[in-house]
Amino acid sequence: MQRILSTELPARVGATVRLAGWVHRRRLLKSVAFLIVRDAAGLAQVVVAAPAVREQVEALTEETVVEVVGTVVANPTAPAGVEVVEPTVRPLGPPAVPPPFDLYRPVLTATLPTQFDHAPVALRHPVRSAALRISAAAVSGFRATLDGRGFVEVHTPKVVASSTESGANVFALDWFGRPAYLAQSPQFYKQLMVGVFERVYEVGPVFRAEPHDTVRHLAQYTSLDVELGFVADHRDVMAVLRETLAGMVATVGERAGNALATLGVTVPEVPAEIPAVHFTDALKIAGAPADEPDLAPAHERALGEWALREHGSDFLFVTGYPMAKRPFYTHPDPARPAYSNGFDLLFRGVELVTGGQRLHRHADYLAALAARGEPVEPYAGYVDAFRHGMPPHGGFAIGLERFVARLTGAANVREVTAFPRDLHRLTP
Image (cartoon, rainbow, N blue to C red; front, side, top):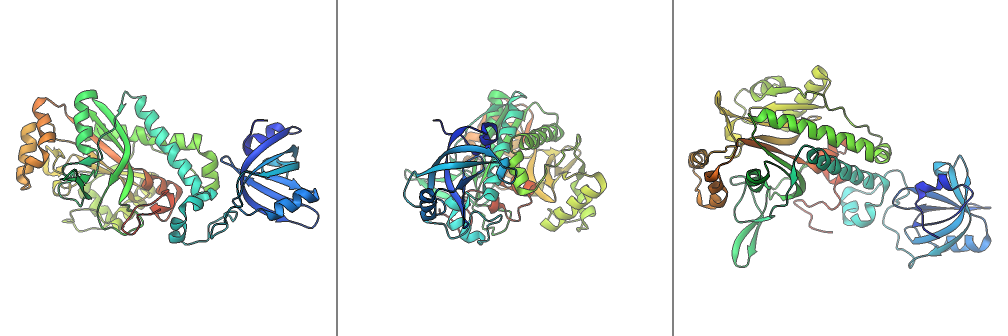
C-alpha cells in the first residue's frame, strides 16, 4: 500500500490508507487515545481504541517516527474534517528523545538561542517551517519572473581574490597559500556576465564580516541578485525590480497559502508604480538634517509610515543617494554628480534592496578608483573587462531573509533563517 500525506485524507473517506510521520502529540483519555501524526503536509488525527494499540501508543515518545495503517472516516471536529480509525501503529525507528520544548504548542515558548541550539528539531514546528516554505516560494517566484523576461541564471565564485565593496569587512581565508576572501556579493561577476547574456540573475549566499548584532543583520545570508544591460538609467532597473517583487509576492500567495495562514499574514500589494522620493527629499520627510549622508533605521521607519499614509504603499524607492555612500562602480547622476543613479527600496520601513546604474566605461572605473585612493591592481580582472565593450547596465540585490521577515512580521531575521550565522553563532 502506497503511503499518502495527511492532506490527501479528505479524498480517501472509507478507504484504508497508510500514513507515516512523526508523533506530534498524544492525548490519552479514559476511553480512547488520540495520536496526532505530523508529516510534510500537515497533521492527521488517529483514533486509538484497541487496548493493545493503546498500550503501544502510550509507550511512544513525541517525535518518534511511525507508520499508521487505518480507515479514513469523516469527523468535522478533526483536522481537515477526517480522522483515521482502527489503526495499526508501527515505529519506524527507536523511540525519539523529545526536544527541550513542546512542538505541539501553537507557539514555541523557548528562547531564540535555545531554538537555534536545537535548530534541527525547532524547525519542525509549523510556525518555523512555514517561514521557510514562504522563502522557498519567494525564490521560485523570483526565478520564474526573470526567466520569463529573458534572464539567464548564473553561478559565480564565492571565494574571491579581493573585496567587492571597497573595504567593507571580509572573511579572509587561506587559498593554497594565497590570501582569499568569502564573496561579499556576486557584484563583479554578474556585471561581467552582462557582457555575455545581457540579462542575468543569481541566487546564492553572501558573506559580510561586519560586527552587527542586530535583529536585521546576518553574517551569511541569501542574496537574490539581478543585473541587466542596455538600460537608460537606474529607472529601468527599478522597473524590473518592481516586476520581480510582484512576481515573488504573487507566487508566495499561490504556493504558500497554508504557510501564510499558519502565520496569520497576508501578502502585500505591490503597486503598479512604487512611489519614489529623492534622497534629499527623504531627509526632509524623515526629519533628518540636510547634511545627513545616509538614512538611519529611524529615518527608514518614518519614510515607511509616510509611504503607507500618503500612498497606501508598503514599498518606497529612495533614489539619488550621495556618491560618497555608494560603491565605486556606481554611476553618478549626470545632472547632480554628487548624487548617484542608485536607489534603495524600503519595505515596511526597512531597507530591503540596494541597486542602481553602474559605470560601464573603462576610463570611468580608473577615475573612480583614483578618486577614492584605491589601487587598480586588486580589481584588475574586473576592470579590464570594461576595455572590451560593456553596455550601460545596472542591477539590484534583494536580501531573502529580510524580505521574508518583513513579509511575515518576524521581529528578528533569524526567526526565518534555518541555521543563522552571525557574530556569535557558527553551529549547528
